[in-house]
Structures are given as structure tokens and as C-alpha cells.
Image 1 (cartoon, rainbow, N blue to C red):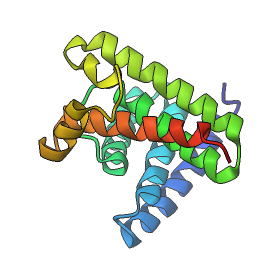
Image 2: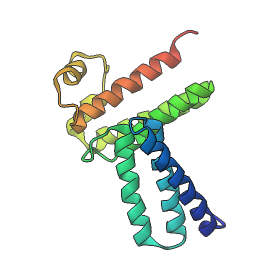
Image 3: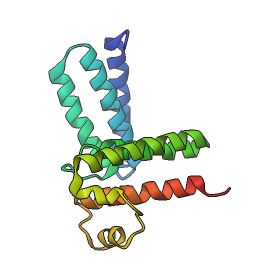
Image 4: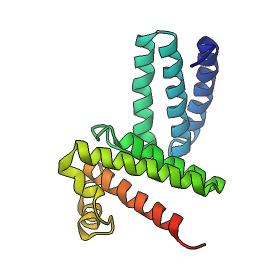
Length: 171
């Protein structure tokens, strides 16, 4: 729980302003957009603690938009994709830090997000079952609509499998 939500809000809003300048200067940089997302997320938390639901909702909408920009996930994609994308991003960060245990934990979390998504949406459960190297997965990536949620989910499953293989490969 935040002890000084009002103070935290001011700090997060300052960070958001700086991150927006960075993102505007490099609009194709996913990290810059991701930083805008995280700043909005922190502001939402502070506003909720301060019991300002209207302002929190406004920042939450901006947060969702920033997330879609940073991940290039379609706006109508299943909500479970958030945990999948977040887990993959965290695994990338942990890999850059040389934290093998952190990579494994993030990939495990991502796998749970995939299982939840498959349980919630049985019509797309095939994406998370079996090998992402399967002909069905590869055909969808090659010929499917890159703006569709199904394509984005297959792309995430393939990226997850690749990250797991890299983690388990002998060094």
C-alpha cells in the first residue's frame, strides 16, 4: 500500500511527462512506449488509492492504448495476452541482466497466462498445445492476418517457445 499516494502521483506524473517526450522522439521504440505504459499504470494505482476513480479510468484507458502500441497487440485481443506479453518482456529484461532464474520464473508465469487464455477461449487453445513449430502455427504466421488476435497469440506462443529453448540450451 502506498503511504503517500499524492506524492507518488506527482512523481509518476513527472515520469510520464518525461517518458512521453522520449516516446515522441522515438515513436517506433517499443521500450519508450512501454515506459509510457508503466507510468500510466503507476498513476492508476496512486489514483485508486486516492479514491479518484474517474481520473484512474482515464489513465487506465491511456495505459491500455500504450500497451497496445508497445506490444503491437490488437485492441480486441483476449485480456490474457497482457500477462503473456508482460511475462515475455520481463524474461527479456532478466536475460539482459543475466538472471537465469528470473528468466525461468517469467517464462513460467507466461506459460500460466497461456494456459488461462486457452481455458477461457477453447477455440484458440490449439495455439498453446503442442509445438509452436507445427505446420499449423507456421502457416498462420505466414498467411494469416497480422492484425488479428489469433495471429498475435501464435506469434507470442512461438516467441515463448524460442525463449524456453534458448534458456534450456547448453551454454
